Length: 341
Image (tube, rainbow, N blue to C red; front, side, top):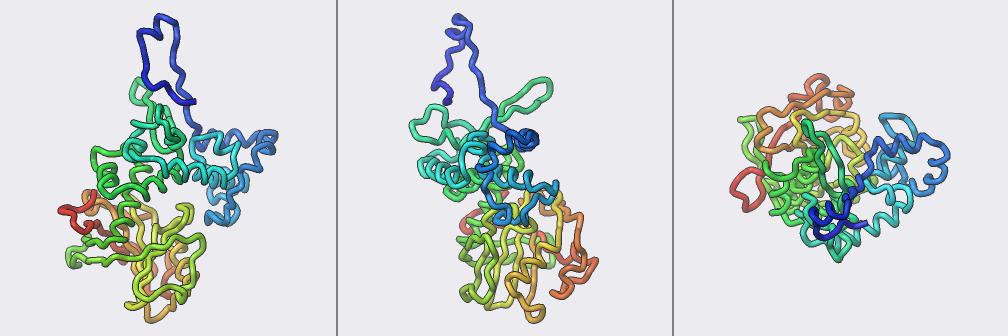
């Protein structure tokens, strides 16, 4: 149900009325709900997102539960809407969200929760509401209903909108802000950008515009066009990296992990799995792993903990020296007068 277009507090007090805000569901609440077997049997047909398509190998890597893996996969799509989660198939939710995004005009307003309540189009379906503690009081936060909705909104957004939302005075929600920063990077990659590295001995590097392809399963390298191609996972559950650039002419693989966090994990087995899936030879090719962050964090960004040390030895990465070999950089878009972030 939509909120009223305009509240009338004085009239409400006279009529002894109070407005009720329907709070969106959290992932923990979904996981608690499906512990009840009777409920799970009713909603299981709608938890139809294939975990293997989401790079979870049929089960959630944290809990080891196939049931929880299905919920987590559907949560990426349905987010805080229990109707999307328990009453509609993944295909139906995808179609509805895509239709809503196609009608959305004020994307910045949707991320900030400033529009949607009284709109004549269906942007209402794109917004979720959560309550959190703020000192002695409870505050309400609005954001896109799910990570999937946020991603397709960010794809549609202009670069200027993404820069505004990822600025110091933009989005407060760190995970959502990180997603927007990631999408800003890929928009820049598509147009051309300059990378500045933390290592003072390394000169800024101009990256020419690069074709970006989404994948559910990595293709063999031989099927890609000559030149540079960036492969971007269809879903963020893939883990390890946000994109892999295959430069066939220069015989180079560049993994990119975009982050706004102060510290980021480094799981080498993800990179090994990708290199083997692509069919990258162990000799004659250079493998780079680049952590891209905002300018303010470049000097202090930490990488770790490192897992699966030695996994990339056959690709020239010496065991125990992975942190030193990984590169750290910030970027500047073509035509921008300052580093992003």
